[in-house]
Image (cartoon, rainbow, N blue to C red; front, side):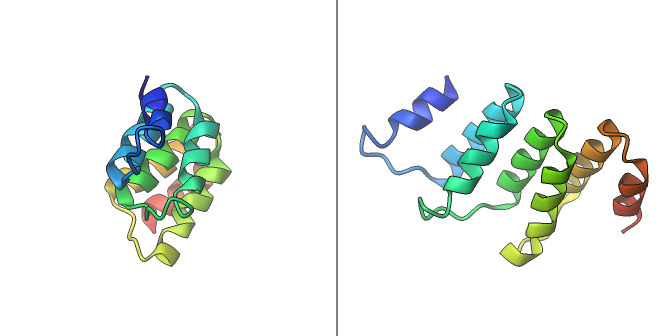
Length: 113
Protein backbone atom coordinates (compact mmCIF):
# COMPACT_ATOMS: atom_id res chain seq x y z
CA UNK A 1 0.00 0.00 0.00
CA UNK A 2 2.80 2.45 0.85
CA UNK A 3 4.50 1.70 -2.45
CA UNK A 4 1.27 2.32 -4.36
CA UNK A 5 0.82 5.68 -2.64
CA UNK A 6 4.43 6.62 -3.31
CA UNK A 7 4.14 5.70 -6.98
CA UNK A 8 0.93 7.74 -7.27
CA UNK A 9 2.63 10.91 -6.03
CA UNK A 10 3.85 12.18 -9.44
CA UNK A 11 0.38 11.76 -10.96
CA UNK A 12 -0.97 13.88 -8.12
CA UNK A 13 1.77 16.44 -8.83
CA UNK A 14 3.33 15.83 -5.41
CA UNK A 15 7.11 15.68 -5.25
CA UNK A 16 8.55 12.88 -3.11
CA UNK A 17 10.40 14.08 -0.03
CA UNK A 18 12.94 12.54 2.27
CA UNK A 19 10.03 11.54 4.53
CA UNK A 20 8.06 9.79 1.78
CA UNK A 21 11.19 7.98 0.61
CA UNK A 22 12.00 6.94 4.17
CA UNK A 23 8.49 5.62 4.80
CA UNK A 24 8.39 3.72 1.52
CA UNK A 25 11.86 2.19 1.90
CA UNK A 26 10.90 1.14 5.44
CA UNK A 27 7.70 -0.44 4.09
CA UNK A 28 9.74 -2.36 1.52
CA UNK A 29 12.04 -3.54 4.30
CA UNK A 30 9.07 -4.82 6.31
CA UNK A 31 7.71 -6.54 3.17
CA UNK A 32 11.11 -8.21 2.65
CA UNK A 33 11.49 -6.45 -0.70
CA UNK A 34 15.15 -5.41 -0.56
CA UNK A 35 15.38 -5.00 -4.35
CA UNK A 36 12.63 -2.39 -4.42
CA UNK A 37 14.10 -0.67 -1.34
CA UNK A 38 17.44 -0.33 -3.12
CA UNK A 39 15.76 0.78 -6.35
CA UNK A 40 14.02 3.56 -4.44
CA UNK A 41 17.27 4.49 -2.69
CA UNK A 42 19.07 4.63 -6.05
CA UNK A 43 16.34 6.83 -7.55
CA UNK A 44 16.71 9.51 -4.90
CA UNK A 45 19.43 11.61 -6.62
CA UNK A 46 17.34 11.85 -9.81
CA UNK A 47 14.44 13.08 -7.65
CA UNK A 48 16.82 15.61 -6.06
CA UNK A 49 16.25 14.09 -2.62
CA UNK A 50 19.29 13.54 -0.42
CA UNK A 51 19.25 10.41 1.74
CA UNK A 52 19.73 10.93 5.45
CA UNK A 53 20.90 8.51 8.16
CA UNK A 54 17.35 7.21 8.62
CA UNK A 55 17.06 6.30 4.94
CA UNK A 56 20.48 4.63 4.93
CA UNK A 57 19.43 2.65 8.01
CA UNK A 58 16.18 1.56 6.36
CA UNK A 59 17.98 0.50 3.18
CA UNK A 60 20.64 -1.38 5.17
CA UNK A 61 17.93 -3.07 7.21
CA UNK A 62 16.15 -4.11 4.00
CA UNK A 63 19.40 -5.67 2.79
CA UNK A 64 19.87 -7.37 6.16
CA UNK A 65 16.38 -8.90 6.01
CA UNK A 66 17.04 -10.02 2.43
CA UNK A 67 20.34 -11.68 3.28
CA UNK A 68 22.32 -9.14 1.26
CA UNK A 69 25.21 -8.44 3.63
CA UNK A 70 27.53 -7.18 0.88
CA UNK A 71 24.98 -4.61 -0.27
CA UNK A 72 24.42 -3.59 3.36
CA UNK A 73 28.18 -3.12 3.78
CA UNK A 74 28.40 -1.06 0.57
CA UNK A 75 25.69 1.27 1.86
CA UNK A 76 27.39 1.50 5.25
CA UNK A 77 30.71 2.43 3.62
CA UNK A 78 29.01 4.99 1.35
CA UNK A 79 27.77 7.03 4.30
CA UNK A 80 30.99 8.99 5.01
CA UNK A 81 31.20 9.95 1.32
CA UNK A 82 27.65 11.30 1.71
CA UNK A 83 28.91 13.24 4.74
CA UNK A 84 26.84 11.10 7.12
CA UNK A 85 27.95 9.26 10.22
CA UNK A 86 26.43 5.86 10.93
CA UNK A 87 24.38 5.81 14.13
CA UNK A 88 23.70 2.87 16.45
CA UNK A 89 20.75 1.69 14.34
CA UNK A 90 22.78 1.74 11.12
CA UNK A 91 25.69 -0.05 12.76
CA UNK A 92 23.43 -2.68 14.38
CA UNK A 93 21.58 -3.38 11.11
CA UNK A 94 24.89 -3.88 9.31
CA UNK A 95 26.20 -6.16 12.07
CA UNK A 96 22.93 -8.11 11.95
CA UNK A 97 23.35 -8.55 8.18
CA UNK A 98 26.79 -10.06 8.80
CA UNK A 99 25.48 -12.30 11.56
CA UNK A 100 22.64 -13.68 9.44
CA UNK A 101 25.10 -14.50 6.65
CA UNK A 102 27.53 -16.23 8.99
CA UNK A 103 30.08 -13.44 8.58
CA UNK A 104 30.89 -13.27 12.29
CA UNK A 105 34.43 -11.95 11.75
CA UNK A 106 33.09 -8.97 9.81
CA UNK A 107 30.42 -8.47 12.49
CA UNK A 108 33.07 -8.38 15.20
CA UNK A 109 35.24 -6.07 13.14
CA UNK A 110 32.44 -3.55 12.77
CA UNK A 111 31.41 -3.97 16.39
CA UNK A 112 34.89 -3.05 17.61
CA UNK A 113 35.48 -0.33 14.99
